Length: 235
Image (tube, rainbow, N blue to C red; front, side):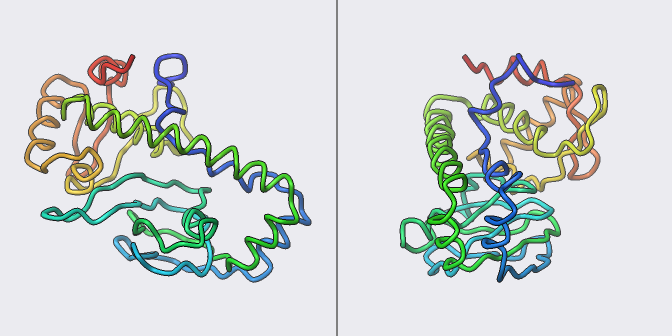
């Protein structure tokens, strides 16, 4: 089932996958002239918070979690980046250290673009610079919504909302009526929701009893996205 018209997914998801889409051939060639490609295993670190950026990363396939270390807790996941998205470019643009860390959520193929090539292409391409500015503005909206979510919503509401967003990210060749399988550990899900693992597991069990989801090991299948939207209570 599509959630178009039922839930404003754009307010919770970045649009950086559109930055390189249909970029003029000359601009794309300039950007990727010295690109290198690496396969990251599940859990492997791509960059660490506090590190000096030497380039940006393009997710050719797979999914990546962006997270911050939290005192007294393993981490707080702030975003799940999908195939086609760019990561790491904020630090390059600001000429600062990485403000967060990134690690592969599953086996992922990622291109590395040196910062010199990125900045040179950005200066040369009005299309790329315009898209990047628009994307950065949109990301501010997503982060603002996230902050409001943590401050005002219950764990049950936050979990429902994150399952809605994750369902969109895990769609592959989706057709109406097809089940969408979310493959995420309970620990990562709890770190994304901002709750202790035990609470997330308990609420997932409640969702399962209500027929909203199914579970197959760590995998979650969303059966009733309309009910999740109702629980998320997003106005």
